[in-house]
Each structure stands twice: as C-alpha cells, then as structure tokens.
Image 1 (cartoon, rainbow, N blue to C red):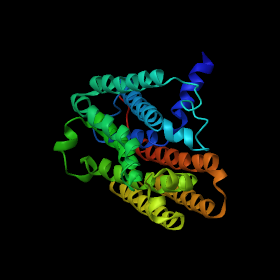
Image 2: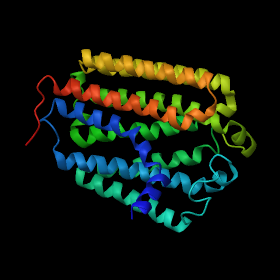
Image 3: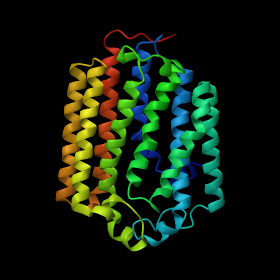
Length: 304
C-alpha cells in the first residue's frame, strides 16, 4: 500500500505542492485577520483538500497530454506513463477523480468557490496545452498557481471579497497583489527550469520563452521577473501593515532568489532537481511563516 501511495505521489510530484500551498494559506490567514477570526478547522481542511485536488488534477492532466513528448525526451522518458508503470486509463480516472474532489470541496466551502471551481479547473489544466502554440506558456502556468491565494481569500471572505474595497486591508487588492507576485515568481523559476529542455523543445517544435529568446535572454528575463515578484511581496507587506518579522522574511527570500540565479549562471543543469526545488520551497515556506507570525503576534484570536 505504501509503495502504491508513493508511486501516485511521485506521478503527480506531490512534493511540489509546497510551491503554491503556502501562498494560499498565507492569503487565508490575512483574509481572516479582519473578520471574525480563524475560519475554523473544517474550512481549513476543505481549503487544503481543494488545493491538493486542483494541483493533483493539473499534474495528472499534464502527464497524460504530454506522455508522447515525455517518451521522446531523455530527461523524462522514465516517467510513469512512458515507462508503463501506470496505465493511461488509470491516470485518466485519477485525473477525473481529483477534479471531482476539487468541485466537492468547493461546494462545502461556499457558493462562490463552487461556482468558480470549473474556471479553476480550466486554468490549471489548460497550461499543459499552451506549449504547443505560445511562447508564453510560463505565464499560463503562473496564472494557474496564482489562483491559489485568490481561492483561499474567497473561501474566507465569500462575496464580501467583491463588495468590500476600503480600507485596503479589507479589500480584494491584497489577494490580487499576492496573485500577481506568484505569477512573476513562477515565470522566473519556470524559465530557469525550462533551460533543461532547451535543445529538446527546439527539435520537437515546442514553444517557450527559452526557445524564443535563447538561454541568456531567458535568464535575464527570469531575474527581472523575480525582482518584480520581490517588490510586489514587499508592497503586500506594506499594505498589510507588517513589520519586523516580514522584513526579515523578505531579506531571506531576496537572498534565496539571488542565490538561485547565481547557481543558474554558474552551475550545470544537474543542480535543478535538488537545489532549485529546495530554494523555491524555502521562498514559499518563509513567506508563509513570516505572514502567519505577523498576523498572530498582534493578538489574533482563533475561533473555538
């Protein structure tokens, strides 16, 4: 049983959930700060379930529609579908089940999340098709991940998120700012990640900004994207009235991103799978920790 669970977790890269989930949880905490308190364990678990189901569906869909390209690419030929470790029909069933899990979880969260769940499914799955016709596939992936903080905010605020626009701390501006930051963060690190497949993508006719601009220009664009992301996060902290803990977190995040770009220019691509993952996981986790710290320290009270 453990081997089966591990196989399916590996199939959808479950460990990579750590990228988007901390931003969703941070958005949830900030959204709850000026309302009646913590949304409660039931809603927290529903938000967690919706996030996991959405990402699982997206990754399963990606593996299904890219299975032929994965089989041709030496780097990905050992993945579960090309290697025959998982059947196509089983993968499709897993993808559909995950999509249903998102819809069901959204139904029990609130009406607005339920109504928007098909929109979320479209964005998280559509990204996998974009590399066939646009160079801006990284932006589509960023938009998919950016739904996480917006969805968590809506889960807490419900329709109030659309009707309350002032003061800024109670408006929909904060999750939008956080969502845009996630887009730029994702664009930056996905450009670096795509360097691994530069030669293969050119031969296979797949689109990306790395193929369109070349590796050197793509690295410059990735650096600019991360710089914009850092400034947006800084602005998010200012609007949220965060102080010392958040400033420390921003310094750690800035240092992690700078180190990531240093490695991208100085090291071969064999570092990507380990150091690259750890650095970006650190960015998201540090952001969550300092955001929760800033919210809880002033005396934030949990609902019983």
